[in-house]
Length: 198
Image (cartoon, rainbow, N blue to C red; front, top):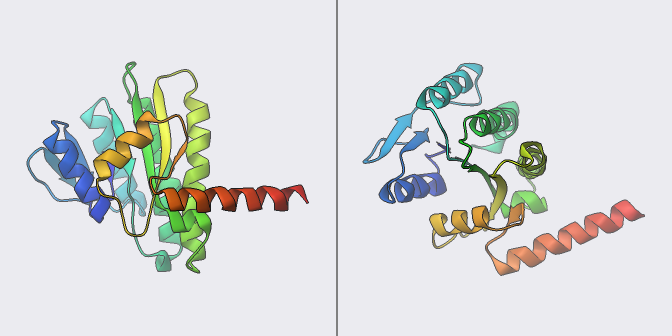
């Protein structure tokens, strides 16, 4: 399942996974060869219920990618979409993953993790998903399930499929494909650690 398949990243990923032979359910996306679309706004109670029902009806889930987008200006709906709803869908997907394993990947802009751009809600949504990733990975424990956060640069990446594969196959909870962004994230985390230590 691709949440936010109407975003550029979600659309690219849905098409690439379908081309590789996966059965893709695109939330808020468009139907195409190998891609089934479901129109449901997960910021609403009804939309989330519809997405959950569809996820459960479809059976085992190997991969859930959360590319949920939306203007931070819509306040509580933005936080529901990026927080509560994304968490509920991720936990549901994990419960439907086979014994052979699976993955959950939350895609966020690196700027939201760094708190840049003057958008407090976007920063809150990104930080929430990054923390949720770590907590859900601990929760699934010994099961062969990988939960990751993929931080995308503003200019995007050459291949969403490659970035996703790298995030899932790596040992780090937080994947930052761009080397410059990786340094900025590391510096930001070091600053936060120093502030907490004072």
